[in-house]
Length: 162
Image (cartoon, rainbow, N blue to C red; front, side, top):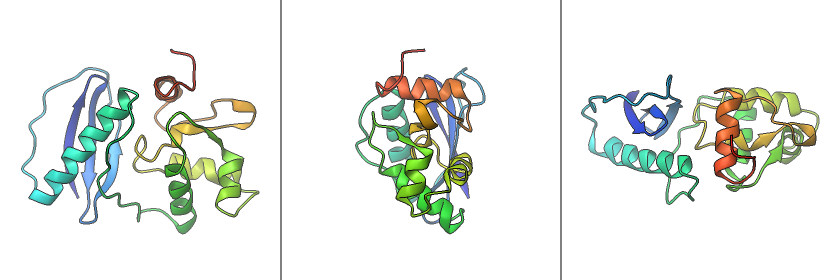
């Protein structure tokens, strides 16, 4: 696994790459932007990293994505992978319920398991688990905290500005 930082106005994200593509995206530990030395990456990973950085910054600015690097979501169970594929189909500015995702993956009674799969999502933000809401339009949970979820939904026009 090769890791490289992505500096943003929100702090430094850390992207991790396998031989298949982006396999992990860690949210900033603080809002403070610090300079990081970019590690020397192989040319293909460097191309993926540029695409990842562009996508992260576009989403944080509330803009439509131009492209994503290849995503390596093989770390999850078959059910988690099905949920993560369903999450990628939720358009920016749209939301879906945990129960709706459960139905979409063919497990209508598995809303709680969908929530657990969202929590295990290794590439939050680009695999948009922040777009999943609890019943009645409530926020539900978010592995990176509800403040992040509110902020991301607000930038997509789906939540009042924090």
